[in-house]
Structures are given as structure tokens and as C-alpha cells.
Image (cartoon, rainbow, N blue to C red; front, side):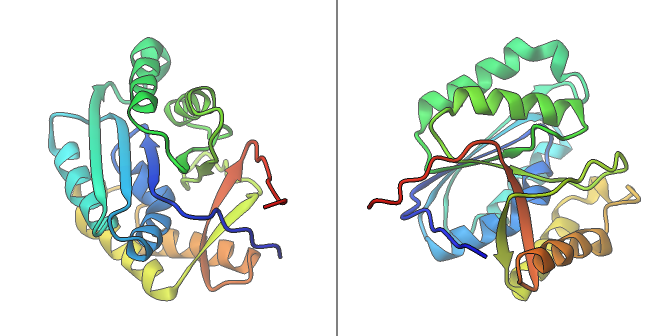
Length: 215
């Protein structure tokens, strides 16, 4: 197992097609980063759910997932499940975000995600953030689209438990979903932990990675 650090992280971008995507896919990683680096800037863009209950849930949840961070959250009102029909608006939002920050790390959906909204956003990110490390997070769902990750962020048992607690506490609108439960979230984290010799982990896909091993 090779562990390569990224150096100092001052700015992070995290994007999701829907409210709760970022928290489900990378909530443990956000907790780990923000607790280790107080004051880190975190720019979050969510394409769907603005103007209602879902946006309020997202605001409270991400404040909890990014303790001590300089959090800047934008939630748009694009229709859920219709991102391909609103490509221009989504692309403009991503490009506007790129113009506002030059992040050290980008957290985004995987390009292989079966959900059309997730997949579409993932493809936008790799064109707007060409010279950045983009980690594609995974979201368990009925499609059965989980693959073989290429990068892992180990999570302490405390962080893994905190992630699950915050997901259950801050997204009551999702509690009716059959997959939205403690067993699903901790179970996947345990499997990914086994794969990277840790108790728990979040896993990511890396589309492209440039190394600088001479410094």
C-alpha cells in the first residue's frame, strides 16, 4: 500500500447533483480534513434542491460536516433527474465556481455513476477543473454501479460513526428510502476499509493523476 500526501490543503471544492450527495459520498473525508485544518475554505455547489426543505437540510448538514471551515455553499434549483436537459445551466454554474476558487482538491461524483445527474456533473468537473486533483466519490444505490476504487481515505471509527449520525440527523426527508440507513453507510465504509488496510474508509475514483516526485 502506497500512501502519498497532497501537501498543504487550503481550499477544497465539493459538488453534488443533489442535496446529501456530498455528505454521503465524502462526508467522512470532509470531517477528517476540516478537523485537521481549521479555517480551510470549502466551496460547495449543489445543482438541485434549492429554495425548500432540502436546501435547509443541506445548509445544516454541511455546517456540521465542515466544522471550523470557511464554508461557502450554493444550492441551485435545477430539476431533479433532468440535468441532461439543463446542461447549459449546469455548465455555467460549474464554470462560475471555477472562476471563484483555485482548489487544492475537488470532490465530485464518479464519471461511471449510473445516475444521469451524477454522471453528467462528473463529466463537467473534469473539463472545468483540468489541472486539479478530482476525486470521484461513490453513492450506493439500487443500480449496483459500485466499481473498483483507485483511492482511499481511511476513516477513524469515531469519524465513521459521526458521519452516519450526521446523515441520519440532518436529512429527515430521506429517511423513508430503503437504502438510507446505518447498515448501508457503515457497511460500505467497512468494505472500503478492508481494501486499504483500515477499519473504515471512503473510496474514490481518480480519472487522471499527475505526480511530482522530484520535490
